[in-house]
Length: 376
Image (tube, rainbow, N blue to C red; front, top):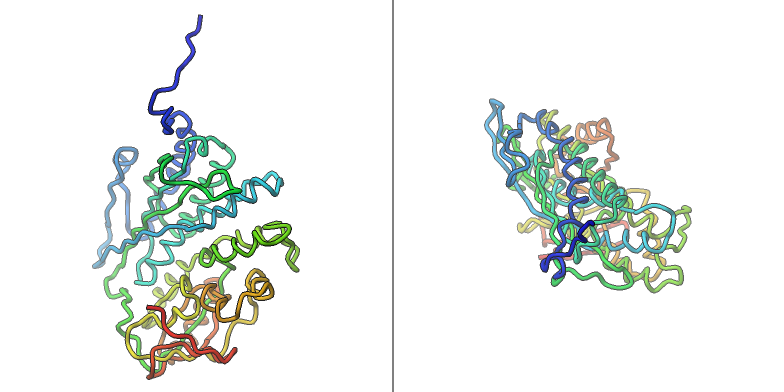
């Protein structure tokens, strides 16, 4: 007679490894397929180290080099995915792009210092072990992490997936949603490619690179506004997509852009992601510069236009969302043409937006006649 398996007291307390294991296996499987991605940048993972406690890797090239590392979290974006999974009833999990969003929060940061991503480690921390049991969602999330690594050229050799019953609790009506974060290590080779912003100068031109949409900043405001609507995230937008679908368009990777600019030895004075702070973040440098924006991209993502029509002030839209520009490149005037040409060849839409001037630290957004103070 078969003996019934009883839960351990630890499992009864909220951490059941038997429920978490399928998710871990999906992530391990995705990670194994990424291990050779950094080889093109001269970085190799020691195969025997994978599967232990972290991973050992090294640079085998002949150039001088620096390592660059950063840690970033996704924030609240996957809460929308969970809401859509519960209520849209389309058969989708809506996690197809969430791993991309999570990884690119960090990958798009390290490139601002001229580093190219080579290693990524993730953490998926749920409030209960049961969240990990959904095989389809686990598969979609693992695949999206794989896609992020592929587009960025980085490996995913290790990660963490804890059940944190006493720390992670989703806001209703979502039943459960994990906190997602990760660490990217990038390499700067040769060292001369490091970008610090120290070269930023009066007369430099501001080049904007089009975003794919919301990316992952301003999500809390989107959630607040969506929950006040009759259909919530199923509210239809003029382009035929629902509000939830538009909000979940994956973040764009700007890794290939920076890689292409470096390959052409373009004189980059500064690089900046269009993240928290919106357009006002352009004035990130502490020196007394005024950033005059004379032109803007023609196409504003539909979600942002909807938020404006829903009553969010233009100033709040400009300082909360990327408003259509996900990345900024600052170069001397003589490099503008080469920068735009190189970026477009790499598959990006670039536009010269304005220039850096001497003056009070602020952003003058001429298309809407608005002056935005710098965010400290």
